[in-house]
Length: 254
Image (cartoon, rainbow, N blue to C red; front, side, top):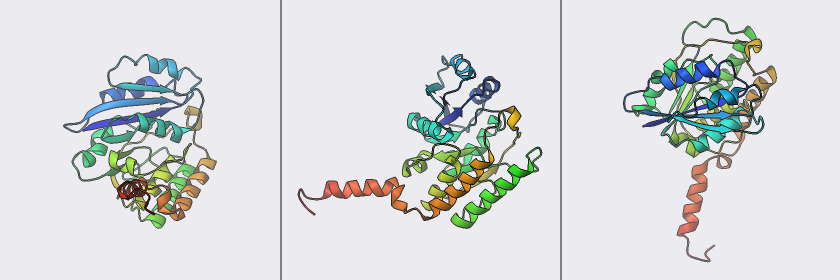
């Protein structure tokens, strides 16, 4: 199986070299191969120049945006470019460790799961600010209450999906609401979420963390909104079935 590692990045000049080295060196489950897709979302701090140093690697695909459109937009671009059977999301900082790839990918590669989230809360977590911890708890509780997700970490950046899951839904978010959007939609489509424990090294705003309190509010609203949006508005399978019925209908039939 091929694993497409998507790295949306915006102004991560200091961390990108180490992140890329770790990603390129990270082991995968047996029988898997890797492609790495970097989506530079309009960086202005020299991140683009750092990425270009690695452009000769046969594993890398690079997309440069002319402006900063948002993390979710970058991920949607990466998904469109990806050719893998599994989609894995990797942030462009050092909060998450690519050494966890085998744990995250194995349930999908072995056929035991379609969706895997790496949970930061399965073991003692130090360094996360109280406000961020509370926001994570609220989002996780809401996802469990509204969608029966049965997870411990809705907002984790380490998410992996079988291509089938991504192809089943229409994604429309543009910024940090990608996580609640995809959680809500995959649960509405009937996919279960498998969790595995991961390591986590929290960073603060002064170290480059970009998410703010308003992003938490938007994430909460996204979960609530997609609980009530009609399924047909984002279920690609419904559209495909409709196209198939129209193709089978006699010409001129109503």
